[in-house]
Image 1 (cartoon, helix red, strand yellow):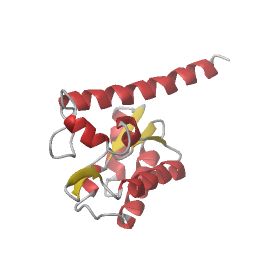
Image 2 (tube, one colour):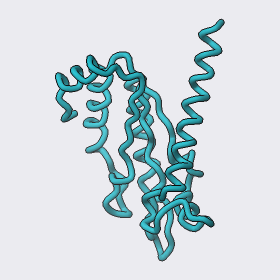
Image 3 (cartoon, helix red, strand yellow):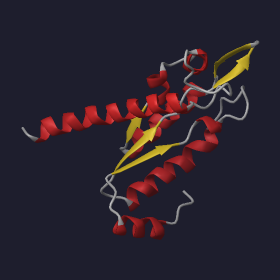
Length: 160
């Protein structure tokens, strides 16, 4: 919500955008016990609304939080608060009439970051938070393919 609306509208006049992709997720977690994200909801909802208002012709996609693991009982596992933040992101997208992409599920869901770290070759770094180049490429292809599926559906319905 801290974006300058006049600046954003000026950008839109100079370079009309068709698509805006927003992502803000794994850095929400400071501690393994984090499960309350009430502080996130209103500011993120305002940010989405401001972008919609400034870029009226653009489609907006909110990428949900990717998997992020912490050590629980001497084993790495998906962060306990992930379902809370992903549900909140879905709600923000729905309430603002924008698209939502479930990055967590596209990675493989619960425990996927551990699987990515341990895969051969690895798809993520041993910080259990960030994908490496191979993992990032895989995520990018997943997002691209999801967008193209929706685009092709649009083309079929617009020809009818």
